[in-house]
Image 1 (tube, helix red, strand yellow):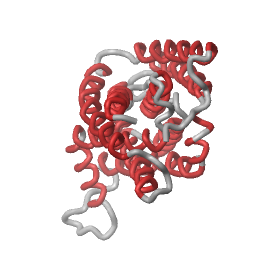
Image 2 (cartoon, rainbow, N blue to C red):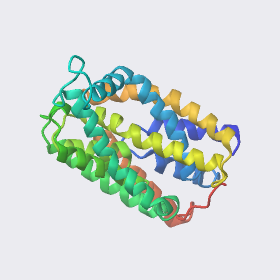
Image 3 (tube, rainbow, N blue to C red):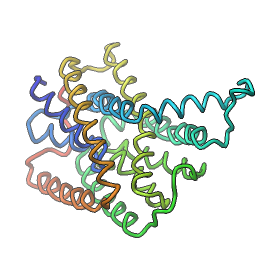
Length: 284
């Protein structure tokens, strides 16, 4: 992979990570169309560190407040400084922890499948289309009455399993969690905000886990292009966060539903005609 390819893939990652259209699917398809082969699951996971760094900066005040209050609510904290477990930020901190468990467990158990079988583009076609229809339905008919301070433990678990579905390219991490949020009657803004916050532990853990395997020699990856792509993904991703949150405050998710369906149809056509291969060939 040269630096121009790295910049392009970083741009794709930054543009698609936070939108409900599946960044991993776009990286996979882009590599095939441009003759770069499959960038691989390790490349995808590491470049996502860049986009999540953008989330960390954008939500810095919220994240530091949640973490501070969560620690101040733990047993043993002096009464004068203690925060009640019922505090909305403390509860949200616990909800993020609980919601991160499914993807952590399934990510480790299914690592071999994630790196190979799940990257078959026919699976991507099905996931793009199915979750497009699901998102379109719940976004149109579900009410927008819930806020994050009303989240229940069952909601957190359901959110967690929705996020875990994103281990399959084509589902979309934000698409899965936003769809679940709308199904649970959270507003579009609240569903998107929680999607960003919930993704951070899993994405950072996955990215640094893959990075450690690359640095130890357990997996092969050209680090210089990967670093370039990660930096580009960070810059572009930050701009997308700002735009996306403004968009969902006034518009529905319909444009993303149509886009997913169109992409699924075009991808299926490419596969049927043999323009691209369904089974990935690693670039490394």
